[in-house]
Length: 532
Image (cartoon, rainbow, N blue to C red):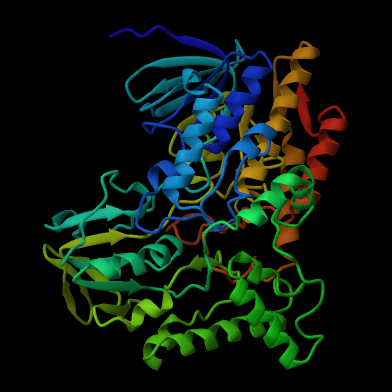
């Protein structure tokens, strides 16, 4: 079957919050734009991640778009931290309100992208052989959208049901009376475990490395607080925009080591009771001073022991790592779930999983019979979705080859050797270490301004220069090197969760300084780029 090549000024890959805003912004500027989305609707990560307990760890009034004052005022959140279903409803509302779906093709996965140097056009092919052409491509593929499924021996032989938290059945899963096993204790598992435990006959948790979690202290939205924020929303957003992670986390400007033990304990306790990611901002040196960080981790260890009845289980759930080394999790009732008689914790660092059998999981110490197996094994973060597409730039160079030793790009936005190709919240940008929707809007606005500049100056091509790209990668790592997180931290920030993946600290630390660098580049006629 022969397909007609569909031609656009801009192709956007993905229709999550990044792709939706890119469509909205570029369409208003007069560009012909088409988004291509693998899922059946908008929402991105919130379309796919429907596991029990899926919820945002950023306050609802901040994890939302700010490009439309009318949208900000008309939408009301029901909870302090919105659940997946409500966030998906919000994404659908935005798509409806701004009529975005007419520029989005759903249930379509891009398989290959080739830059035609003669025409300066990107040629894209879908898994069904459909062809698209565009002058510019914007990758809104998401940071956490490529599921990581470890190569467990015998997984295909398991006779029960197998689910990955990142691709959850839309109709849900019935756990009633079932013997359930879950592999992993990262964010999705920490959210899902308390809810599954209430329904399942038994729940066996297979943990390799414990991660830190703090209580969300979630509650119904305080309507008085919501009204106060909406009254000054523009100023509230600007205040957040100027913060390190673009979040209202009430940073404490003092050292954890500069006050008495009693004062420090009271500060940690206050943050614990407030709940959420602001715990990381309890003091200004938790990310840079190992002794300061140790005071925070010891506080959480003590809390874990206070909550859990069995000291041995509590010990297993106390992370040996630095607080913040892995993404801090936010939970509702996670630790107390291990006091339930139907919940068992298995330490697979001491007793590794040997294989999946037809009836369950076999470690080197015991076999566990299961009806349902859940893989809460995370994602090939930040680069996985991009590298899943066969992307070929100048002289046939593939992105896979380019990034063989780790991701290299300029500003986290553009890759040398891949002209007219932009990544939203990719490696080398604040992305997962900032409020994602704020970071998304900043990136899309920068790209939109860039495309206007090209159009007004009759330029057809923009490409990062290799020298500037290399300097940028050095800068990102230099900044990370000033913290405790760059060396010795086995986290998905560095790709350590994926066997064979190069270890590079991928996010840029510090949203305001990043924004200033992006502004400076644009103000200086896109210094660091080749334009023609």
